[in-house]
Length: 405
Image (cartoon, rainbow, N blue to C red; front, side, top):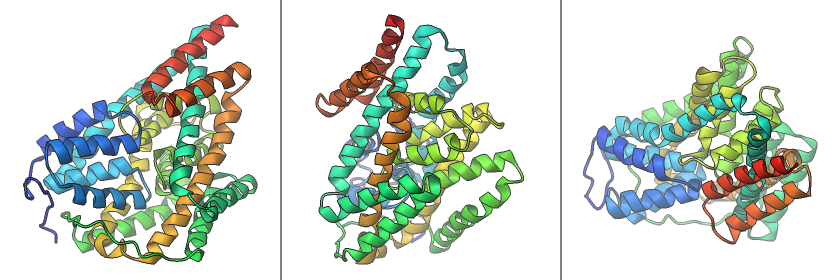
């Protein structure tokens, strides 16, 4: 298994890291719209145009990455790079797809303190307001897909109730665990794979080592966090990345619990950065680069951004590496499918909680703010406007509201 590489269309043809880097750099510069849109860009470029693999294999790979914690589009890109050019290809795909947005957000973080005056503060407030529209869109879309029946809708509401009494990362973890248990209690269904095999150069020994590393870091990093602020930063962002199910937007409440409630980043700075993250291409997880740069305690700046960025991506990649060799067997298990149905329903409730606090409660100060947020939501949902355009409009509108008094 360790020597096999999938690639239908070119019948398993191998490429090189330079080819992978250039291909994913193009995607990293042009892929707007969040993880679902990213997967569409990947399919068009790599399945239809370049024929690195066939549709069936790509569908299986997407199903795998949606099943696991972590950033779905980045995990798919990492796997595609590995399938094309081995471990060096995986690293090239990750760097090329991630660096453009990470660098833009890092520069925004460094420039944000110099933004002043009514126009500057108004534009930043506009970025906070547009976050309301974007998170509301995410909640609506996820609820339709992940809570289509009464049972899973009830799990989502139960997750909101739990978060009301047990806020922060403890409440989120409890909601996911209880949601998974609820999904299992609802019954098991046999879900057959779509066909095709996802085969990558990962031995079973390497997979086991990756899972052990994932678990060891979850245990050791909290112990090390008390001895060094750098370890504390890595610990909080690693934990956030390890608990993300259901898409990139779900990282919002996790990061809020870790850095805002922890006193490292203000609500205003957090929401302004989240709004800015919607205007750049690439994975939403690069929001971590912004947060790491604006942390109150050092390390911050470039070093803090780099530590936060690597820490938030690492757990998702370790889990992905650990499951890849066993995926064909694991995905047929009804128990696994039932657990994930319940956990995904709980995730909808967690994101719905974040929509209220900190997003809505911190951004909407009067009826004008609410009108702007509602306009952004309608533009996204009804007019299907691209997110970057809605973000730009909200920043300009926020500046206009500030100037008008």
